[in-house]
Length: 515
Image 1 (cartoon, one colour):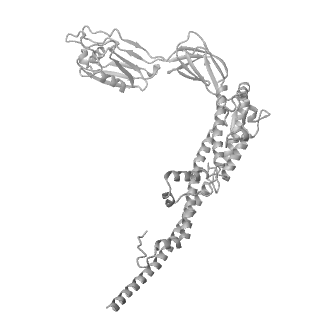
Image 2 (tube, one colour):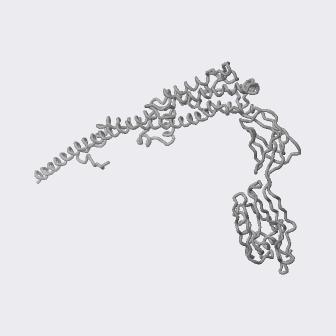
Image 3 (cartoon, helix red, strand yellow):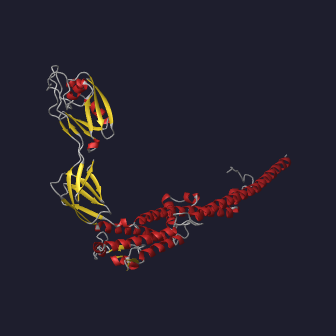
């Protein structure tokens, strides 16, 4: 905006006069800017709510499937021998289980090693540590040790010299894909395969005589191939060979390289060998189904309460978005409260929101037929509290009689849990149909149209078009305002020029007559 210096000759407050003259144009510009701001806030409000509706829509979609309610629980007669869980495909009843073998890793516990003196005897004044070198253990030479990882089939060669530290050797083993560690307190190396099972074991052997000596010095020698007189196998190390896990379920034998088995809907973890058969009992997970229903209602209540609150929001009549000048005349707290008042009312009495609420509440109150009998949520002790007893904006929320977490209904008979225990199939069938009805009610609102995009429950296309129209209209009125301001500034500038000329002439005449 150009800087204008006016009123020097006339003494008039030209800025104020022109502002008054163009006030109708300023009002129009401000009016449309406020309307556009309010629309953008409404778009944000709808976008936030739509995300919640879409998330609920997806969750409800999963509950249309029978597997959502086909829950099983499994218990074992001896939990120290095995852990068992049941998926939806498991069969109810008692099954026999026998753990024949648990899976193990190849495991080598090294012999105790120590620092050697010049004669090769143990130097009891020194303690071996990870930083100790092989020369301190009495080893000299340049050897090669091979590690074969059976899982990958890869063989890694490790070069060892007198300068090799125990920590270096441990790292080389780890890099080769086996587990290795050194216990300084006990002076022993521990090496094992990374996974259980015979196919995942490892081999550790020397490739030359110096390699044999190195293994001996490290306490890892298993066979004597050392040619030096007096050399021997470490007599206090221990080798535990890898094994596969084996179980017998209902008489059939299964093998696994891990201790995990998946058989006919059961997930079995072998913990220890059994001396005979133990029993596995599979039953309907009544509590799990109950929690599934409870979770659906909790999600529904949270969403419907929020939508109801938005629809029934207090009127913000007389409140509009503030201009920068209006904000400057208010404190930050006042501005925040003002804008919150406007934003809270954006979806008040919104037609799209009313239609969505109506569709969802209708789906929840309908009856659904299962095996020739019509059920309602009330059939299972699930109902709303009614307008008189419910909290504000919570008249559509559902409560389960006997739910210990719900103070409003905890003292009533728990018909839902009783129905699940007595006839889980009927409860599951009803909940599937209810979820389908609820899903479909939202799905219809999310279909694309000329006014809305796919998966939107509000007219996002229409709003985007309105926003664009506001941008065009605001530009038009800003241009008109600028034109009018320029017009009046030119007029007043011409007047100032004329007055300046008149003043100059008057001064000349005064000077002439005065002389």
